[in-house]
Length: 160
Image (tube, rainbow, N blue to C red; front, side, top):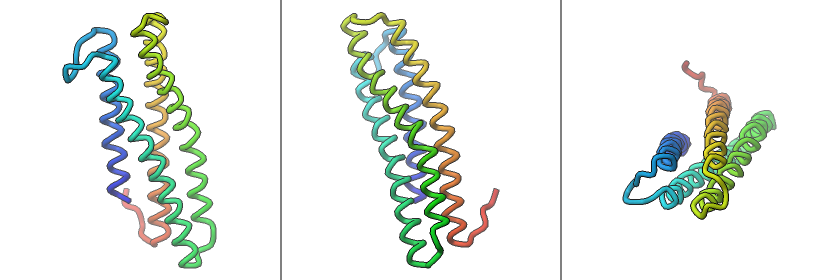
């Protein structure tokens, strides 16, 4: 569990940095890894979607583990309900951000073919990045709550 949670953090940082680089690349038209903005954004897209898929599966996997552990140890449904409430907090903004990023990635091609003005793309890019920051704050809170559930189930007191 700790490995996957830390992997989510590391990949989130990498994808955020890649988004920042991609934004400046769109404005200043420089190459990264000998790739123009359109090609670099394909790489960013792959990293971003892999990261968010890993986050989703992390919460799914720990939710299943919490449910199974609760059933095996006859702990009742309190822990499982807490796990479900975490998913209700994290999934809606996460899925909305994925939608924003899909729109952003589609607009890369529209800007590249001059179908929409670049300033529209820049505004959507900035809005998507701001929303991504908000989602990452929510994810961090949910990771902390999820860890608290695991510690509560095991009887370990958290150290702050």
